[in-house]
Length: 433
Image (cartoon, rainbow, N blue to C red; front, side, top):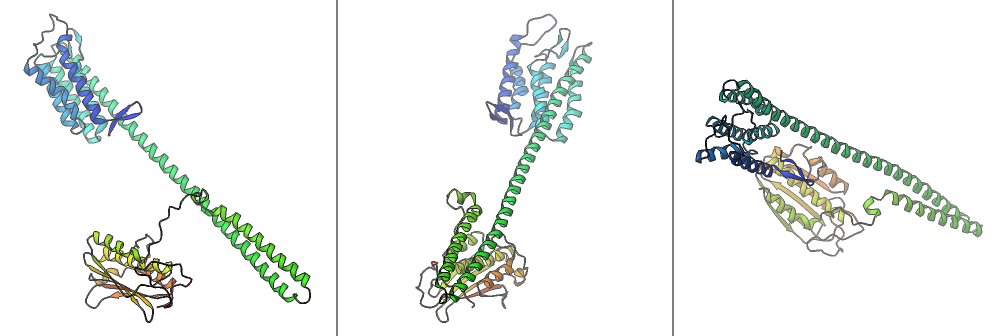
């Protein structure tokens, strides 16, 4: 346990608690000789250097109890027994009655802290071995006729401290478990709420699709009818054109209303989007540097003149390289990997090659996890390339290792060259390689 309580709403560290208890116990023991009234029945030795050393040993180990609880407890109990055996402190039970001084209270505090901070093994040792031995020692040190009283008093004092410590630890465990359950319940409720919102948005999206499809179909029918009667009945054609316009306006109104509902809370408040921008080909050097930092010998080489390509092609190239490097790091081990981007002018193509020198069978698992967590591996790369119309070839190299080779056809040659591969919002898409 890192803290033993709170003060003014703030948790008190265990080190501060232990130091305060040690100082308080030492001050009480040092002041004890002057506080004990002179009596003929109690003959105590005057304080000397041995008394001071034993007092410090019986109290100051509390300051380091959080680090060595059992050792601190044993040192303090031994020093307390010696103080009593050498008649530096009053007996626990004697002719003058029961005397529970600061020395015994310091040992009881150590028992309490040990029961709070240690597990069942140590606390069982303290309860089953240490406390009976301590009570037996007190009985042996007590004067004749008072041994039973000393044994019972010491046993009750230490057992009470031990029980309070175990109870405190149990209550803390119950409190922590309750907090964990409350946090889990809160997360579950938040997840259920998000799922309900997503389900409702999916229903609204389906409604949006039905509304748009119906209204667009109606507009098409009205437009065809207006064209057919344009010459015979211009007034009727004008009415149909007006109906088409009104249908379009109604559709736009429905779209706006439903899209407002489909917006996220952040978008509805006008806040900036937290989604990071999609990576581009320009981000490949940073990706290679990040992979190289993991210990993989990786280099990137770009040949040819980069041209403007759609954003979809940029993302596809980045994800293919990312997935290939991820598979290499996970399955090929410490090897060398070369990333090559080749821009061809005629025919306009972009070749993406990622080859390593590792074992060829390291990449044969189609379910290798992708870098973005989708879990599709090589199959995911093939789907990405296929979605943009490109081609992907993967397989072992003759001399060892594995290669991933993707080919994308570039836009027409009249595109303006973009050195460094900056994406432009082109109207065309990547086509088959």
